[in-house]
Image (tube, rainbow, N blue to C red; front, side, top):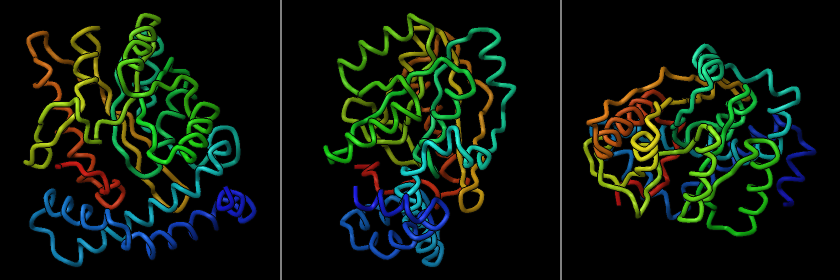
Length: 273
């Protein structure tokens, strides 16, 4: 709470820079540093030491920036920072709205990932998002409040209870947004950078049950507090495609996103455990 208040005094630009630099310094001392390096080497086995260090350094910098930017989330939605986010693929969203189509939006923890659901909802999409609570209960309470108030009103916690809530939203023709880049115990093994990774099957299950397309969404930090959100064209799957087929395809999409700017993906998840 103290750090958030401190950032508020400093303002968004300086807070983002400062927090990014602090995380660059402190981040490598966390236990996850070994996981991060191992993950990068799995994904890019031929990368040189200089590139490896650059990815790690910039990832920590981006991590720190996101932390500080939570304090200014409201400004990204309805304040001066809203002009800092460029949206590519508005035509895709317009078609979804005009046809009252239901879709599954998928992405990963890139750049300031919170802005994706925010701008999808802000654009007029009927949206619910699936999330995994943070391990830190105190911090999770704060983040959940921020997400509900300014990112997406309808938040669904992962789990059995959440699945029932999700189905109720689907019946009301809501689209769903979720991250597919975290390890999940209830998932299936699917290739990611030629390594088996436990991957969520929720998007594939929704495709099979409701016969709806998947829309990949990608966000990148262009410069400082400037971002670009890209809405990709919908992916349609034939009826004979299995949950495994669909999940494998979506992991290939995720892999392409990560490869675009690997320094902006959060590598600290124990992805290939």
